[in-house]
Image (tube, rainbow, N blue to C red):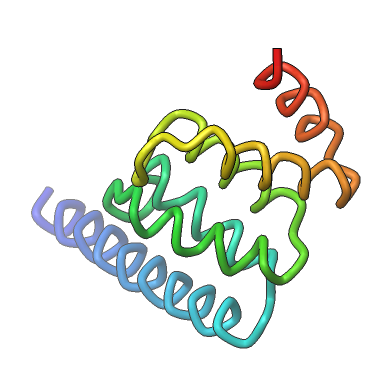
Length: 118
């Protein structure tokens, strides 16, 4: 029984360590211009998936991804400004980022932009 518990805790500890390494890898990749990693980190921080929930960090990573041409990051950033998550609500900025997402072939950006204009 004790061996089973020790094994369980070792697996958990190893998983946490591996997750932290993955996050650092994603951060390094984002800093190196990998917009997919930026969007992934933004989502992780927005939803608290594998990291602590931090809307400000989510916005930071979505901004990096969007400025690098990630339609997904622009879409999510538009939503953050539209809802006031991690930033003050700002309809003009929300529309700006949703329209950028639309231009980057994210259909949801087009739809959400039109909804926000109505």
